[in-house]
Length: 133
Length: 131
Image 1 (spheres, each protein chain N blue to C red):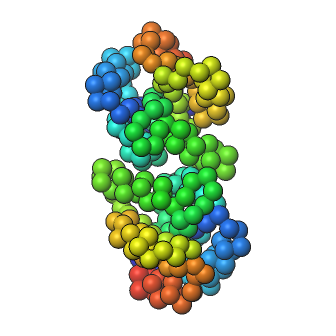
Image 2 (image 1 turned 180 degrees about the vertical axis):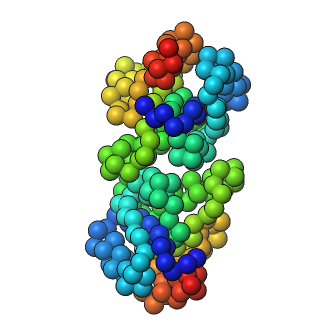
Image 3 (image 1 turned 180 degrees about the horizontal axis):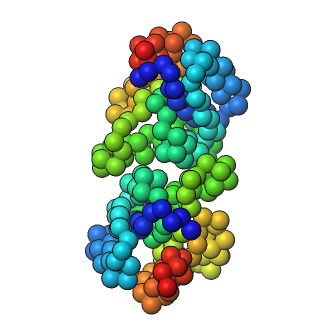
């Protein structure tokens, strides 16, 4: 785990949902800095600039979706370019089992959780990936 | 930009062209550092990790093209996440004049050069920017 940063990035286009996630993180991991992006381009910039330990990533957004960031990170991992390796939790409303399986198998994806978000599950995942307990 | 320790990033899918660009830059700036990417996804990673001063960017590449790279830089600047912008020279085989003009007008683009690259054009630009 990257011990240098104490950052979490939330990439979600819907402002209300984003705020909900941010408030939630502020409650369960108050010692982390929260960064927000309403689109994947901004999310990508913040991801590289802030090197977060954890990214909460919506898959379906206007313009480029979450897949865009996963593709970039995977290119970086495969060529050993990246100096950091965030845990990416993908939030997906995708219902096809095949698509969900494919997403779960991606090397950049730490976990996949469905939308609407089951916050109990998210809390467990956050604690697992950030090893806060 | 200072001649010593200058960093270049070449984003180009064709290996031969990358080698030609690299040889040319090394000859002009013997102390420079050159990073190479074969698509825009690698280019974006290398840009953020290595902070090149100058980028030679191909537009048409498999996986992810140069357009995406420009969009990231422009969004980073618009949202003030990026403090400094690199100089981006687009090296492209696009022949359509309107398309070329549209690329040239983009905020993130400093210059557009047609392929095959005329090295004297690039040399003139670089010598203007790099002291």
